[in-house]
Length: 234
Image 1 (cartoon, rainbow, N blue to C red):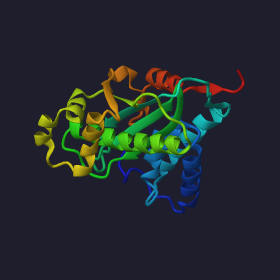
Image 2: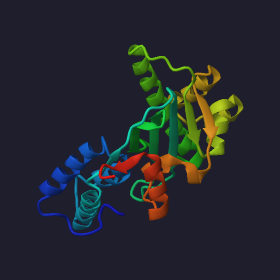
Image 3: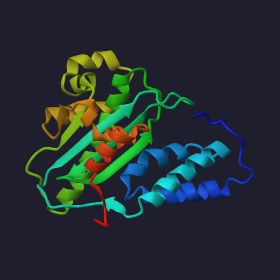
Image 4: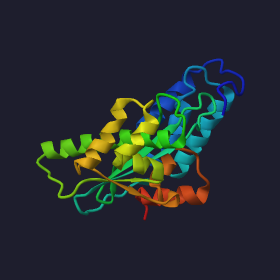
């Protein structure tokens, strides 16, 4: 959706207030992360069309008020899913990073965020997402260590882009992406030190896909269940 679609709101106060409230709701409802991140991009000059999008989110929330994350006991293992929607923003052609981190079978951290610069290829977009997820994993692992909780195995990060996987483990391929900032190369260093394991996962099983784009109902519901969102009425 273009930023100029629709007539500008005469008073955007209500729009901004609703979007701000929805941002807090994403702390416990990962299924809302992408939609809320999307409408946040229109905060400066919202239009009637953008306001309609917010209303649709509210209708969805109203119909799923009793839903939340169901936590269960499980092994002390960190797993993460990393994905990117290449050039998905039609206004800026920036890509969207999506990631979710699981402790055992429970989601404990998730993010839907537009990348800071335009990526020249899907591989570059996916690699930036990998770096972002790796940084989140490193921070969570350090927090657990500070709490004297030691993980027996290195975290596993799942990605559905084979080229990005090759970049994370084989330094030969790095000559093809020298235009990337050096900061993103720490993924390969963590893999070489065995602080991180990066594995391939088919796109249809990529849970982080729900944080990068709007999905059709069957696929959205599949990832919704993988995020362990359940009704408290059951």
